[in-house]
Length: 269
Ligand SMILES: [Mg+2]
Image 1: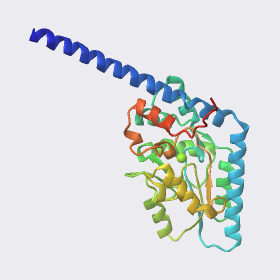
Image 2 (image 1 turned 45 degrees about the vertical axis):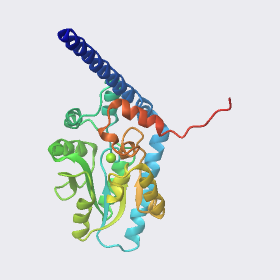
Image 3 (image 1 turned 90 degrees about the vertical axis):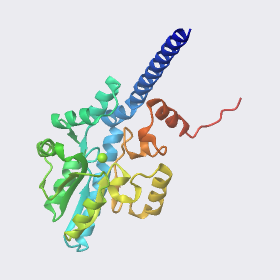
Image 4 (image 1 turned 180 degrees about the vertical axis):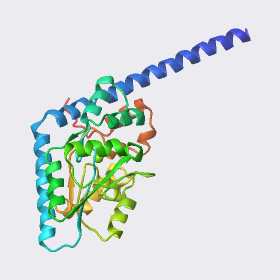
């Protein structure tokens, strides 16, 4: 009798775990499906192209105004992914394969050196480089992907890529320490360009969306004058900002969190 009970318990447990694993696999697929429209928009819409162009035009004007005002050693800090270079083909692959982001596939993508330039990014970088500015590329790409990243950037025509100006992630995604080394070298950073609020400093690092929105409100005068943001609806810290602990959640919990975060209209009955 005891043996039969144990056997039945074992069968039930295996069935339960198998059902859980199927549920999580389906949730993972749904998470991937949900990025399709964002990637469609970034790859296909003229609207995305126009926003990128207008952002870099305004950033160019802000940089030039600083030069005209006599700022000494003016510098510009730019992020790379979804700021200067377009990795949407990787996001598209992940959506098509219904595969979650992994360090392994991301590294394979970076080593393929197939990122494209964001519209307006190369012209902006060249303008800064040829008008007395120093451009710092501060990215959370891994130092292990450094050579492939340099090769990709050079093929696209980005100027001034050196050991001093390309600052990748060594131990933390918080960029503040790298920004501080630029300041310590005597540069005056007049423009920041990014697709993530964390590209402007430490204030929003590991913060939730309510805190991130408060940062924007507090610094609203800097947006469009010193901080320039490109849209990225396909990924970013705004996603993990949906809830505390989001990154460690199971796929089904992430799906639930995304739905819970919606501000919903109550239709009349
Ligand atoms: Mg980025």
